[in-house]
Image (cartoon, rainbow, N blue to C red; front, side, top):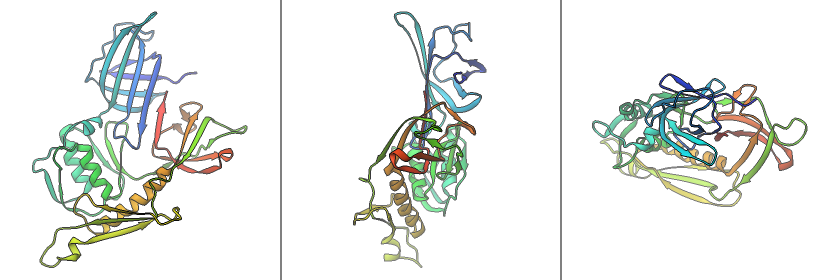
Length: 317
């Protein structure tokens, strides 16, 4: 039995879709979808009334995965069919597309979540904090021409915080792997639930040592090298030979901020090096739909990989 896919626009539910491609990723601030169907479909006898800019939600088996807006609508005549296609994204796409604006363009002694809320407020996007926001930023300013998402992400990187859409039209400031899927992905054997699996291990962006340099504003009590020559270092024990990467913090910070940034680089680059692309049977596991930012056991002995991995991308097709 195929999953029940419903697009709700203006209180009307549209089903009976012929094709679907919906994607969510930890690397993207907004989930996206593309649906297509005949001009008039069995479950909706009247002419479709879906327009660009319409508020919408996409649900799979009753579980909402995207809340946002219709980006594009197209209709075409094929050899045997009239095809109608709808594309849309989470509301958080506005944070990616639109420029960062704020009354003063800068903050003093503000926390990450306050900066994010101030930037998202003009676009009606809710910010939810689910991680330690870290210390306040003594000073933070919008860079000319940057988007809302770029400004928030720049600050989040200094605090080791992850940005991801919540599927309900808001943005979460969280941490990686906050939840866990108990159902293992099994490759090969009688218990296999994976149809295909490819494992990639690419260490080109990993280094043995990460040093992040930065500076902070001085004062009467703190000046000289203690403010202008700050640095912190983190190591990756998985890199055997000496490989050093020196980075400069994007904005003013303190030693604690530099330490978080160095550790973030070491952790994230190591995690990105080992990836597995898996085609599973069905869009759900016993606990619900497959979703991003969940830890899941992957058992693929034939590929010499048996460990927990973080779900970075999910694509429903």
